[in-house]
Image (cartoon, rainbow, N blue to C red):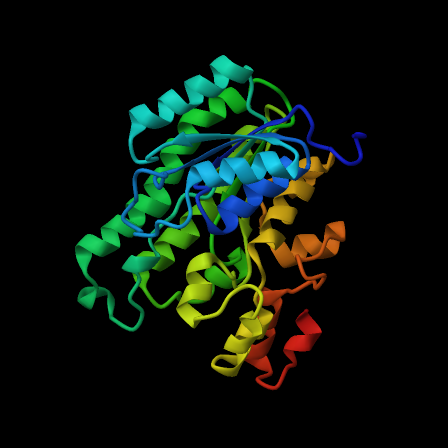
Length: 307
């Protein structure tokens, strides 16, 4: 393979939260670009996390990474457990001696979200659990992994969230705990960028658009092959994207020698697709956040203009 076909050859990546959805696709696309990818999560072939899905495991993700052309390494990790995360980073250091890409995609709190309740009606235990899963895990992982990443200039940290800064900071995400959870990674990337700039590394926040994750497809009772059937129930679903799109966004960003120009910014998969020229798995180029914002001022806007 040439350098052009494997632009991330020799790079070492950690995708924290790679069991399914965007995390899995990001890991696979990094592998397709030649990276060695450590993939973590709580669901394995002999253990299921609180999410309760048995059909996606980190072992399968690692195998998909390898099949795509990289090297996938599955490491079962609960990112709320400091000792487990420290052991993970120590293992990467011992086996590879470096870390070039950290993707902080830990979440797994969809089952806790209840929209429509006021803050004081929201279940406190569930709300705090969201903050643990989507904020505390990111803080622990970044704090323990970044010291390895900064040993070499050019390192990249990607904080995965839901929503751009443009959208999230001016609109309420309907559940205060969820709102806090999804704004925190944007602020983390901004804060990390200040320290990382001095050592030649980069931090960004990245959001997919309306993601056709395994859970979302199940929710609508469709598959990736017939997902457009769900548009009849909810027309805005026409703006959705497959997890591959976010994966290609991260791979393109990691392969860009000038990626430091994005330092501290909030980015979306649709935005980076326009910048780097990649498409979703079906050849389209959706811009879900552009469509969502445009529709607020023009309810008749055509979704076709954002695909």
